[in-house]
Image 1 (cartoon, rainbow, N blue to C red):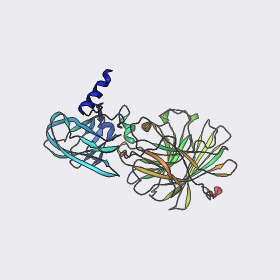
Image 2 (cartoon, one colour):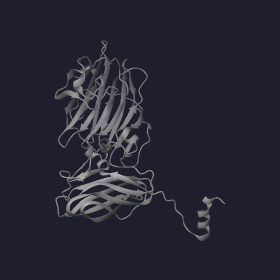
Image 3 (cartoon, rainbow, N blue to C red):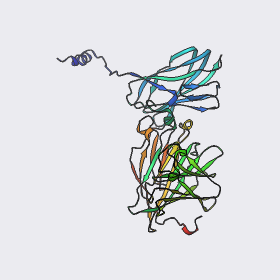
Image 4 (spheres, helix red, strand yellow):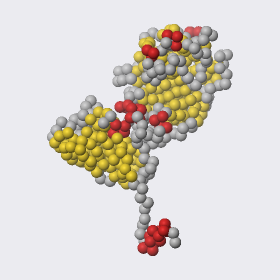
Length: 431
């Protein structure tokens, strides 16, 4: 008899229940997995984890995804500079049909380094678990400096940020739709964008008309400011626009009323323009971009924006890109969060009624979009990304951030019903 059969025979004869044990410990660092979600003026999450935690109203949430029902052991790790503090630890996750299950535990922290093991957590079904910290009382200046949670589990598919740059992970995954283009040269691309109610999250870029050399869309920059942004990359590859030779710079040809123009860097470099405009949730905005060679070794990129509040087309800007001869290539849209502190908030955007206009003047509807995502999602440290098609509105959509787990597979294709009539645009009257 082989030795491996002995435990099984023992269990059969004596009624002993054996379970496979593959428990291991994973360190979930707050620097990449946590957010201050209430009273954010004081407490902050930085390279060393949670720091400057002095306000009892501050709430700090850490997110971990568990791939199966299980019971896990979680230990709170950190340092208290002085005296004693009492805090609340709340764990929340979904249980059967979307109902939230919440459990709260009070913990006393002593001065110095601490490792406090919490009561075991029973995870009822796959999904993200939120671990929330809130201060109750303290005798010193701070409630504690929290560096990480140690999670003891046998879950090989647990999702959390590790071996990845915290900045990009906390921003959350960016998601894209690539539109299938006609075979003949395309000179114009038209798209419509609508941000639904409660999805105008600060730090969001709802990019409508993307092309291989740049992008055009709208942003939510702050409580007071929103922008229509149009950028074209220089053919000279650098993160610092000051290093671009004059012969390789993107040159402004025209700009619209109230439009600001400058240079940008840190994600390639080039020419950038934006219009401060108070766009509203629920309204559908129209974006039009023309890309055409000038037959002198350059290509002209021009974009217009139409708001229903104004019932007119606005010129954003027209740029000349040197050493380039191309028509519109790589039509796409994307949704991204550019503020790491906002990566715990979900945002959704709808894109509809895509049309291409060929060099010969023929309108061709866009019917197909392919979903993709960025390196953050590809690394498997975040799975809150989604794209799709809404049949009620005949629009494609993108959704990201907020730690939902209903993800869309990479390169999933979606199709919409093509509209019978192209957009009515008086090209000669465009500003």
